[in-house]
Image 1 (cartoon, rainbow, N blue to C red):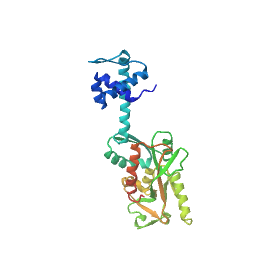
Image 2: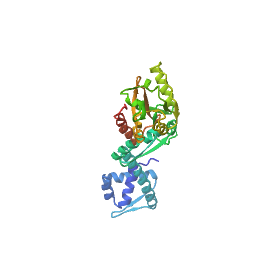
Image 3: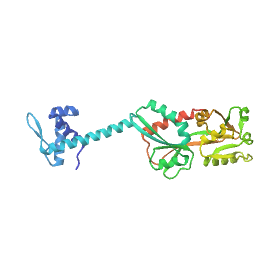
Image 4: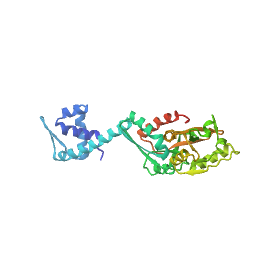
Length: 301
């Protein structure tokens, strides 16, 4: 059955107004065009829907039954189409993001707040999660975007670089390292070094060995959370390593941080998405918004 939206809208206009003249005016078409659409619809359905006299227009019994159902269906359709246009025009929308716990507690809140100040009708839902679970959240469809340290993508996940950050040494004010104008990895050798467990430390050791084979680097302690590492630093138990985006948390602990060079080692952070899936306009706009702002922050690129 080949019924068109134009035919259905023509029938609804006549049913609402009770007049071919008013219906044609509401649709911005001629009366002859309107009559043609009604005739085509009746021929397709094989039933008369409207009786027309010189004075009035009447719905037939079939037309009376069709009218309320059709009005509800087209109302829902128009609502869905308006919602799609609103999402396209950034008038409404939802962005769901999974970010590693440290990113979620330091970098992301200010970025989300700044984005929503520009787009108050866009909701941003942030899921803080362990580093190794970021890609899993994307794969499961729980979020559109995952943001975290570099990881090997798989056949279902695409990764795109968001920013790079150098490793920073974190220590209390007045610490021996605070006297160095420029820190080197060799300067850390005489201090206990606290790092994060997993690939944070593994990739760091790999990169240091590749850049400076003569450098013997080994952390004294590996912990699961940056808050633990910073608490240990504050208590004088060692020097922690972090990436500059954690600056706000380091300030909370009253600590200092400084980049470590010779060699410079960077860690990449990426955006993870489902391969072959188009991002919603809101999600794409959020990515376009945060990228330049992150790379404009001190030490990040």
